[in-house]
Amino acid sequence: MARTGYTLPVFVVAAAKAALMHLREKIESQLSVEIDLLPEKAEIPISQVAALDAQSALAVTLSDPGDNLDLTRNTPIWAWVRLSERRSQALILEAGEGLGKTASGEAAIYNYARRLFDANLLPLIPPEQTATVSIILPEGRQLAKRTSNEAFGILEGLSLLGTSGISQPLSAADHLEEFRLSLHDKVKVCPNLVFCIGSNGMQVAQRLGIPESAIVQTGNWIGALLVEAGLYQANSILLLGYQGKLIKLAGGIFNTSSHLADAKLEIISAAVVAVGGDLQAVQAVLDAKTADAAHKKLIELGLAESVFRILAEKISHKATAYVQKYANVPLKVGTVLFDRKGEIISQDSQAKELLDETSSYSWRNR
Image (cartoon, rainbow, N blue to C red; front, side, top):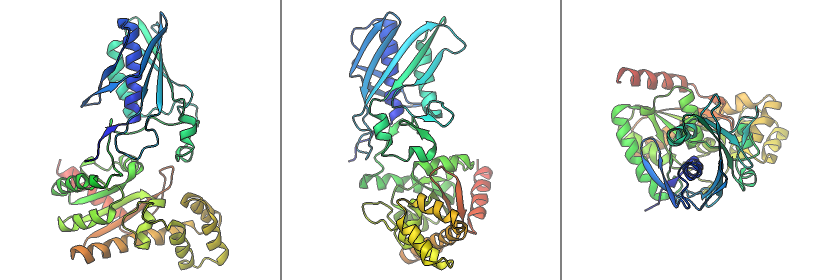
């Protein structure tokens, strides 16, 4: 059975809490701290903690995402905590080396991580003092080069992103069963579902106001879960995902793991031909290093809108045919494609209708 772990914000908060407890309680060693994950609890091991002077301490822990394929595994996390006279805020969070910053210079610490900090540190800060936490990820800048952070406007390091403290091993094959069970539970309540491909899909869904009761995560098993939805009599499925992942369906690839198949550029190229693009446009796509780079090139050539509209339509058509073939049931499917920044770049003719159906059904049945 795949082993779950914890997301990066949990370890950052654990290190900060250990340093603050060390300052407050003058404990010589802090082997672990309990973290409120909202609502679960977790015991997080601490590698080292030490006072630097009477008002500051440094704690270190190591990231453990479980069996997930996560590049932050065993990366060191440092939290430097200083106490000072109370200012306007009881808790101040700063981006040290390796923690990313937004284009405006703010620390890349998002909602769930800030809630974790508040829940775990605020009760420990004396009323007359402010705690300033500098988060340092010594390997963060290097690791960030292997992510798409810069495409999302996060510079110089990793971000503290996520909606949960539990790091589920979404890349492990036996986790498919958990997706199936979630699908079975949700289709009973909301027959108009939204399949979110990846954590980015979740963020876009939340921004669009899609209720959580309608959202199903799929990992890479889109085909298997589409068939399950058909067998469990779902009315419709809206596919919501990053274009570089979801367009694989337009080529008949229904397990989107790059370890199994990756024909993104070839699929985009075929769509360029279908809308009347010339050989130079096709070659420009094939020469692109990423699907995002191909999209940007097609914008320059004035072809992006027509190419990705035909791809969205083809994804929905292929998905509907796939369910008909393996479940022998009709299923309405719509598709919304977005780029690395989470901006919607195309949708097919059914997408808006399905979004409206999902939202209205969920509101009626609250």
